[in-house]
Image 1: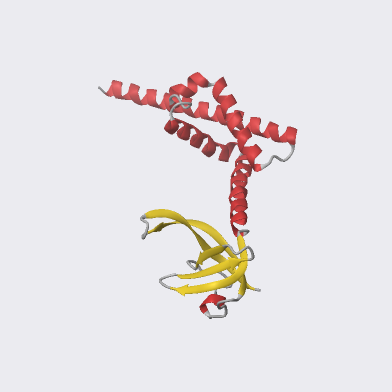
Image 2: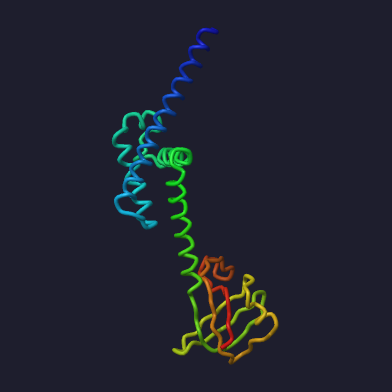
Amino acid sequence: MKKNTFTFLLLLACISANSQELLEKITKEVCSCVDSKKDKSGELSPDNLKTQLGLCILTSYTANEKQIKSKYGDILNDEKAMDKFGGDIGVKMVTVCPETIMAIAGAAGDEKDEVAVEEEKLTVEGKISEIKNDQFTSIIVKDKNSRVYTFFVLDYFETASLITGNEIKKDDNVLIYYSDIELYDNKTKEFRFFKVISGIEKK
């Protein structure tokens, strides 16, 4: 019985060692592949960097398909297996090629920042038609094309004192910065987009 247990543990140790060797091999291939693309093209855009990472992983998968399937299963048809495979490579890249994984992580962060900047650029300029102080303050604005917009005050922002201090009133001309945020409307019993103020200027 003890002999069988020892043999089983030895087998597990060998499998684990082989798995680590496979992961190390694949990660080095992926890192070298991405770095070579950067060397040939110079600085890659965030989208190109992520695309090249995906292509490099696919190239390494093709070269090591049998071993990868043995460890992870059919990653091309199993989302959980794909996530596990990609996650393991990502963790390993931290030690094998930290600069490359940081560049990829930075690209993802830059992309989020770009989305945030785009959201901040949403603006409407017009005349206040009405200010409603219900559970949430709402400001109704008509722009120069006579289009009517309803904005809600749900979060704090730097110029919120213009509203809380009653410094803006009906018929004032304002520039409103806002974000479209999906919220649950209890009246209609469905989710819909609301224009939430992120900044306001008196013109």
